[in-house]
Length: 142
Length: 412
Image (cartoon, rainbow over all chains, first blue to last red):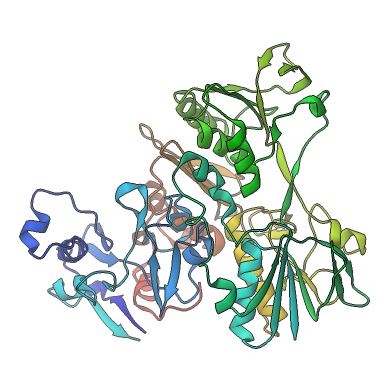
């Protein structure tokens, strides 16, 4: 299965992936309009310290602790993609407790949000990867 | 091959999904005394709070039993196991044969003897959907509710009904609330947060007697009430295995493959013990994620696979009125605190390993800590100062990160 992989040595720390993520999940058609005057809550997040930076998003584990631990059944795997049923999630954050990557975060309306490889929006494949100017994140089979 | 599962909650679902990883053909029969499609037990408080409904509480989709090709016998109780004949006897006399049996009977409410308890008419436990429905029909906006037990169940119940009753008083023998997951300082934060929502706590105290809708406490205080919720604690439901002389400590004893001491009988979930790797001892870890993972592991082994159930630790994520709490592991060894403002954090380190943590308020990326505990990551291999400050993958070496973020994603 294709996943988002990180080439840390090429990450510029420019945060563009985060903006592309926020745009892709905003359901807006115009990026400028979607992001103007807002604080973004992207599902991919840059960790940065001194001259090191890299992007972290859901690894879509084959044996996902978040899905196994989910108390409501809101998290499930569909063809390898771990997705959240926002209607079922009640925001207990057991998945945040479980995720070894720190890749799940609290979203709006006190429920969780996570990367679904843009299968849940109109872009269809990871928009963060499209926005990365330096191939520091790639979407491929390994 | 016929698999029989006694119980229809998290561990049972884990087992069904585990069995179907290895065996798509074998017959699976689920027996549950509750008449409901599998639902998420912890959601009963959210149901009363109005944050979910019975439909959304379903732990798996409506067609779960069909797609998993299993038969659910609901509303009937398994009353006896005959391990010599490999039979399960139901309350209506029906007898089911099994090749492999899973006991996933969960836990029962623990009710200590209290004088006059039998005379209290509106008294309830708070563990099942039926309990929640009974509580719901008993309360009104004039209700004065007395909850015995300031643990996870008692406090979630308090939150669930808080907007629908006149007053809530919680009594507990311990010196703090949530004593199973919080230290004193952490408990104080959560307590004062809940007190702002008009929930009253009386700690270090127990009920001596109940008389005419009045509880007389051990400190002499009297509490008037009309609805009583008993949430002192839970005990593993081990009866079926006990009767056939299976090995039991505090819960049903299982080996690393989730098998009981009796051939072809497995057990998983709140009814049995797990090996807690932080304390290196068997413990009853009555927690939903644990129940799923143990059930899944049992299922895989029942269906001829070989999977060890390891890395079990206590872990909890819970919130009260928007204040989030995440805890894991055991609170042993040296303490490292990092608190600011409303956020509270404590890490516990022993023998160079992270053994436990408590986070209240800011719980972002808590799973990084959970993983350090489960994987027994030597803290000398990571930047501990950094990870203590803020959990993240930055604390790992570049080489490790390359594996973590660039490697093939296998089992965690």
